[in-house]
Amino acid sequence: EPARTPPAPSHSPPASSSAVSGDADTEFEMFLRTSFVESLPATLAVMRTLLKGLIRAETETARLEQLHELYRRIHALTGNAGIAGMPQIARMSDALEALLKELYEKPKNLTASALRTVALAVDFLGVLFEHGGELEKLESLPPTVLVVDDEAISRRAVTHALEKAKLKSISIADPAAAYDLLAENRFDLVFLDVDMPGMDGFDLCTKLRQLPAHKMTPVIFVTGLTDFESRTNSAISGGNDLIAKPFVFGELAVKALVCVLGRRLKTER
Image (cartoon, rainbow, N blue to C red; front, side, top):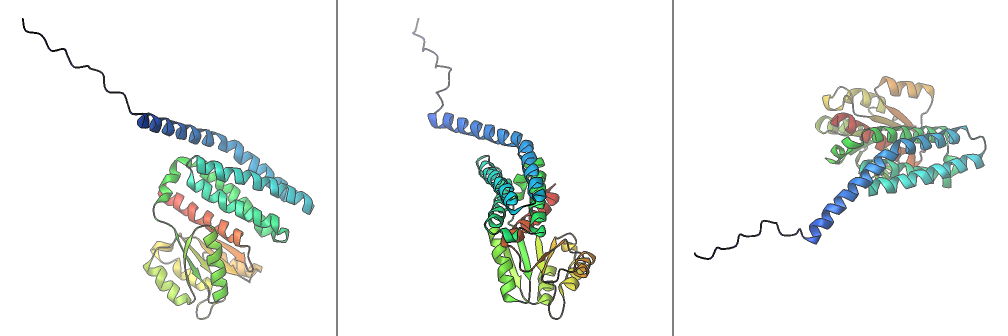
């Protein structure tokens, strides 16, 4: 009887060490992300408690203590969000961290407006925490901001602040030319000066709201006019916010990022 050929071994060759290592890394990254997400409600509660303490503080020393502790917590959040692979939370947290550092180093800038902006950012972080699983969609096209101001120094100041939030911007002096740009292009956010020749910011805002692509685009007025009438005109013309000159760079950066990410999140949902 002829000798039989032994059957080939049925087991697969062992997986390479690099493949095993890659699987382990992926599993660990998922663990970090899950742990980070699970910690977010407690993180938000602490931030809101510190914010209340900051708002209620009656002395500069007490305000600075609360501000420093809030900064410390936000700094940790920025790092942890990056490690956990949550870039949009890290981006928002980083902008707020920069603002808190700026306010701590220059307490005179800790105005009611700045406090409102800090509160706005904390609330928006809460929104990002709730929609963490949807944030990957926000990584598509980089957001673009339009800055309209007939004063060159003011335009540069706004664009500098936007650079702090890593936001790309186009600046223009002529409001009529700005309207043409808006008619032909989609922007994620528009900053408008109020007092401009030919067409003031309120009129330009009213006109851009008639463009289909910009019915819901956030508009922030940047102006030296802060009286009640200016704020009323801002709302009537379709503006979303108003920030006074001179402004804190970090405050403008935080407002811009909240507007841009908030609009992107609504659009993607």
